[in-house]
Length: 465
Image 1 (tube, one colour):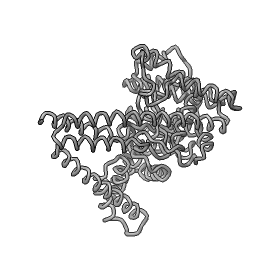
Image 2: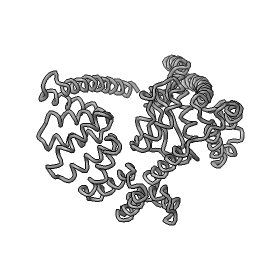
Image 3: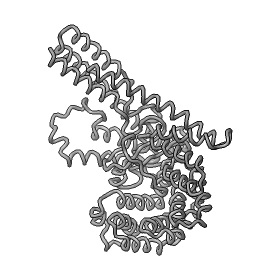
Image 4: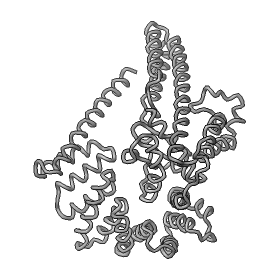
């Protein structure tokens, strides 16, 4: 009897994790890069408009993860893994993935959505299992619950496959309306199919049940999409060469930044004197701690295109992180001004101004960083740098406000609440900064109370088990 109840308690704990676990984006690292974001925004703008959405409201977010994946998790955000950019053959493939994910957004789908009947079936089986256990038959209760879970999972998988097919169909429409070829979408699914074969996915699962998958089988998707895409007027549309060149640059820099340096140097050996190779090797050498080699690669880039803001940004970043903040000011100032104070680049420039520890640079650092956060409030790095400016000026209330902004963005409601209260205590009541601090305080108070309620519920569940 007691052993059966213990097994039941373990199963209940597992079910709680399976149903209520947090979304994947919350546990992964978001990468911010001005050049990459600029490219992805431009490449997806037509698709977003074709989907009936506003390019100002949809975000394409890069997640540092080597797997080939993309997803949505509610709202108007498309998450792309760096592994997808790494393995994509061209920009058109990435556009095909984005079109598919926009189909999920327009369809109201989400990764851990609880409707579609999944929640109601699983909760029903849970109730029946508890009733049987309470009646003195814990093993029977477990059997009922497991059968119910199998039914729930089967229904969920069917629902998930339906969502994927719907997103495929929507993606086809968006590509055609935007005048973008669907070749990339097909090529990407073929790439996934080849990976499945190379990993022995089918050979190790000769009787693989297509109804036990969250997605339609790749071959099935390819067959369906080939006919739909090839008859579209946009099938033979070409990606603008300038966009494709920019994609290859972004792909190279991401490989240099994310992958192991040895892997990057093997893919882009010193004999390769292309811009892409210089870009990738600059990041690889910088990661390996070889500043001279890294600077040589950036100098080669700047020599080819002296006014390219992203090459100048990299040159300044490497100088800054190699202990030469004063030398970094020239390329970073030029990069900042030529991009009209792009927030991410301006944040690095502001950091370099502060790192010189020259009081004469403090006013410019404040001006640059205030512009950066005004144009991109979701930049914890810029808020941290601006807080350092206020600290050096002795402006404690605004130090607290900058800390509150940063904590609010990084998911630390306790620090955000405490800092916002401290800021309100020293700022002029009713001023814009005071009102902003009040907003953060209210949001953080709600978040802290919710965390406390969840903590109490978790403690009650543990006690009950």
